Image (cartoon, rainbow, N blue to C red; front, side, top):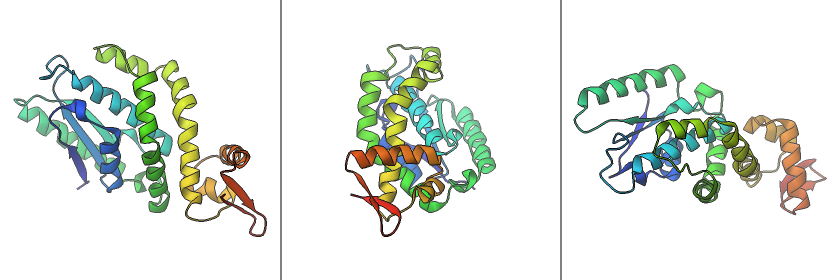
Length: 221
């Protein structure tokens, strides 16, 4: 049976990127979030839309670090829908069995996965700020959320504001552990060699990374 983490909070508006990351970092194969149906929130926050935004954003982060976003699932289930809840969980469990264990199913070894999660963790405060200031959908429509998070504008903003920083964060997390060549970094993290070289050059100019001439590899400055 796959390991599934069900995140329980009073309101899905309390869902935080850090909660989802912690669940995956602890080795769970999937994370399930269940919330009230849109329009039926018990609080003035309309928290289910906040959860919808967090889920879309974390799925995009999962894609970027090489994890299948279907490991994270958000469903609207009211307290009276016990049968529906059981059906949804059975379906989710079947899907996770198809995907296989976390990381292994994507061809990412345990060490590489560790550094990817650490990189995301280091950026979460920044990502939450970006979400609030630049990626927040000012609407109460599921359709509008889906349209935005699958559209070209979001793709451009995500690349500009988050993706490059996350790739660099992965590299720095790895180099804090040991010195490596650009090729080794590329292989461990699954990043393109050209992308790794770009980040290393930029980091070297900023004094964050140095080249160890004697060992022919890169290290944290």
